[in-house]
Length: 341
Image (cartoon, helix red, strand yellow):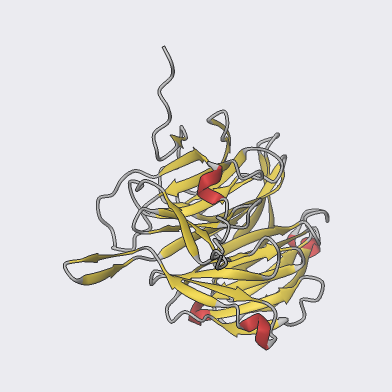
């Protein structure tokens, strides 16, 4: 008897978190998946084998996580700590602390540093190679205009989105001040910022069903390329229902990208040609986070209610891993008009 094909939502991972999923990320080296949750845990999965490989408990909700390599990672917790997680030994240590919940953590392969953003309105850079103890591992503290909501690193560039619709762009080699200080071109609160894989700009989403495509090049020609588009909304009885766009993930090969919203949908977009390529079957609840595997063959989807409508009965938190077909993510060539015969 042939095995039943996985459901159209993808394969559901066993042993999911027991509370809201704050983020999930694939490794740059394997199909391992790191998942942070409000249940105070970071879980390590082998997504291909559908196996839980490790679990780390924290003193508070875990708001973000990232890989260092396949043997270790980092986490950002509401208990104000930044932790290093060593998978093989199931060991963790405190890399450092903020004065408020730590919302974001990124590892820079270019500088070998860990960057954290907090609701204490600061960014901190840490050197994980130094001997333990936060005084020795802290490289610098950088004041932000508001609470940090989302961050993204590509090469030596760091993009930081804060409350108040501020966006700071840094060169990690010179953190003394932002390279660019910007304001979001969207009118409402920022939910997610993600850098383009080619390093030329970033996509930014808001609570009001929109995504802005921005470019670092400040010349007139560079800024003429920027635009914003509506998504994750529907019309019902003549009125527009608009959903927050919680997640953006770029395909590592094609540079197309997925968005996930509180409407439970994942959409795939071709930003260069301003087209939607695909919409996946609706998930049970809000899409809280998205991540492509390093080769773009897998997409991890966190279906996890984000409390946008307050405390109410909701579907259980779940992680789905779906196989990605090229037709869903590959840009379609522009059709050129036939020249007159």
